Image 1: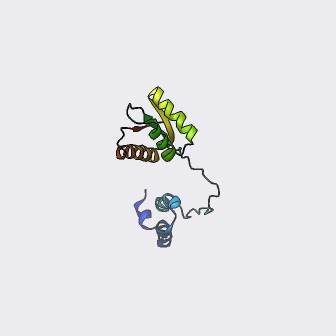
Image 2: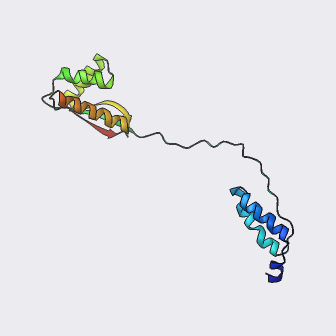
Image 3: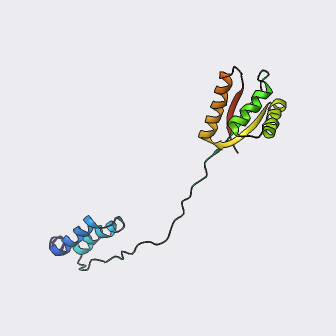
Length: 147
C-alpha cells in the first residue's frame, strides 16, 4: 500500500465514508468500512447500496410447550366419594367420567386426571393435595411429562 496515497485521500470522500459509517444501517456498516482501504488504493467511487426493505415474512419456529399429566395415586384411606368430588371440582369432570377415573385409581393404583402445561399441572396437583390435607385425607397427585 502506498503510504503517500493513504494520506492524500480526498477529504470529501473520507467525510462521506465516515458519515455513512456513523449513520448507515447495520447491514451496510461492513461495506462502509471496506471503502476506506479501497480509497487508499486509488478507487475513487464509493459503492452505492440498494436500500429496499425486505418484504418476505419469516415464520417463527416455536415448539409447543411440554405437556404434563396430573396423576392421582391410590391410597387405602380416602373415601371414593371424596375422590369423585375432587375430580369434578378440580378437573371439571362429569360425575360419570369422575367415577370412571376413581375406579381406575382404585383398581390400577393410579390414573391420569388431565394433561396440562407444566405450571397448570403443578398447580392442580398442589391444589388437590392441599384440599385433601384440609379434609384430613392422604390423597396425593403427582405430575409426569407426557411422552
